[in-house]
Length: 99
Length: 305
Image (cartoon, rainbow over the protein chains, first blue to last red):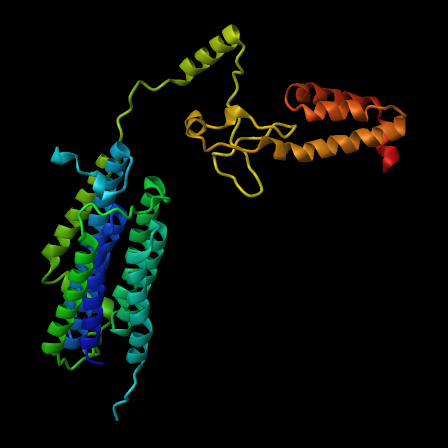
């Protein structure tokens, strides 16, 4: 099976991730949309790995997973700190730097 | 002969719609928990696609790391940050939602067109690369040319773990009370105010709820105010309909008194009914009274049986 179908699926998932990132207001869901985009990129890399017949794409996807795990740990810790001080999970309320 | 429909094609057409459905469900769900579950389903579908692409190691890693670790971390945070928080539908920037939808759609079309124009004609298949085993092949690359990148990710993970501990750590506001100090304070309070020096009663366990916001029950079915944290009580979450809980106790006592009247010829039933109608003050003394009466008439329960 040609990798094009996988790449199209990856493009669709990435666009849905961008859409969620832009239209949702809950910071947790925005964060999940970022994870969705990372997953879409991973799928593209694994598909390319399959098409090219070597494992470099899979190694790349593995590194993306590691970095995503680190990113989630830090991001969620920051979200919790913001929630402790502001009692809100909405990005619209994090506008205090404006004033 | 080249088969027209391979297992890979079947897997793709099963799991690709599932993953898209999970992604769409994540974006459109109003509740964060529904979003998280949709995303977990989408990640499992992607893991199955990895399996169909000759990537068994990534298949397992995707399930363990993403659906196992990352999504559970999301759910834990959600439990703290507020499961009930739903998005407001008020747009801060006018027309942002429509503009974002158009942007996302156009982006999808552009990406798909780009993929369609740049046709990838790979020979396909990882049979040669996976000949010595997928994990062994990945290891020979990760610990070969990319060993420095691997060491960097180790440092990154360590820094992330330390940072999470530092961020989550809260400085105590006052000095912690030692055991000796607590014992002294409780004894003083008992001597001066007559306050019970024992531990506070724990939260109650009901048939349908065992959360900490449900107060413990006293023997007569009324609630114990002390068993609920004052913070929860102030927020108004610890509201329990006391009268409904006393109904079982009331029925039991009424039945007991009726049987007692029948056996001894006394006429306590109307008085007890009055007392039961006024819950609270009488209840505690009445429990003692019943236990004394039971002790006094030993033969009665045996006779009933």
